[in-house]
Image (cartoon, rainbow, N blue to C red; front, side, top):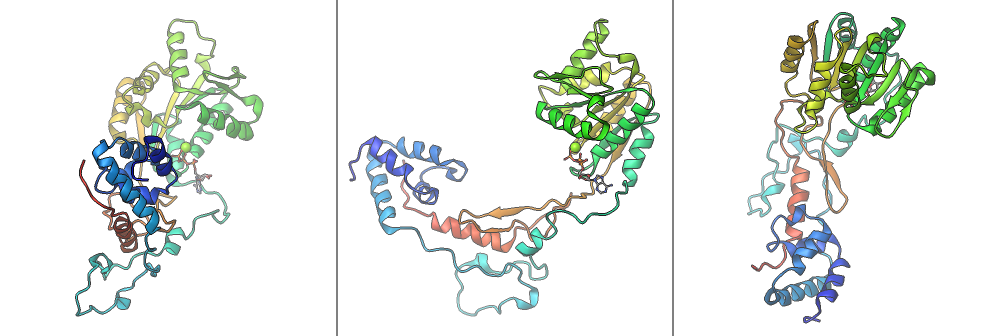
Length: 358
Ligand SMILES: Nc1ncnc2c1ncn2[C@@H]1O[C@H](COP(=O)(O)OP(=O)(O)OP(=O)(O)O)[C@@H](O)[C@H]1O
Ligand SMILES: [Mg+2]
């Protein structure tokens, strides 16, 4: 077996589980953790012939040994301070099992997953920042920079409703065709199919509708054409331009499209920029104020209405909280969960295979 051909070795490697390949690669293939199965195998197959024999021998030995013992039985993740085991006098080898923050009990997986699912139905009440954004749009341009899942769409829809009631037209842009299609369905359900149209590179539907959805590139091009007097869009009645996912303004390649769209946006229409992740919204607001006829009002907060939680999925399939605390809060430091540390260290130990240098 040891002098197997390249193809035989390749087939044998592909037949192995990733866990075994990790053990085999450990110490020989740098950063094997980040590689997929195919790349690990290709790297192993590229070993020089004098190391190939050793590789095959190790592989055969691992196959014969079978899988390494499972990690020790799962311990309850939540270790309260008072439940901490007394410090053993005898030497205790695995230091990663020690409780490193006895005063800060770690969250359990049950706590981590708690509340995830369909929220309890309750009467809809707009948040004060949503009302502020809508009110400001009556006279100003507005940037809404709030975390994901906060309800930016509500602001867009209410602003659209007001524009339509005032016999104005609305253009809503997104950076992706797929998102534009989703918005066509969503807005058609709210305003009626005859009220909404779409213009993307692939699709042209109901282009005379008062609400037009398009990719930002298409709007930029329409505004170019409008400057040349060739537009088929009723720019003079355009009352509102919504740029969703406007953090794309920072994109090294596409960002210029957002800049030009803002620069060419007709002065009578209000601009509404929506984003969860503009890094410098105040600077963008100042810039828009400097080039437009009305001030740009900034709505900015970091309160998450949909909590952000992080977990670690071990290759064995065990899920554990990534951090000691349940929610990820902006600006807070995080300590890795002891159970996750243990799982990770166990996995590292299991994948410790024979070491030899190329
Ligand atoms: N004031 C509110 N109270 C309760 N739920 C709200 C409120 N406003 C919006 N929602 C709900 O929050 C959910 C997320 O809203 P939305 O899709 O508008 O988020 P978003 O801010 O656009 O997020 P993203 O950055 O991912 O695009 C929706 O189901 C929406 O109905
Ligand atoms: Mg959104």
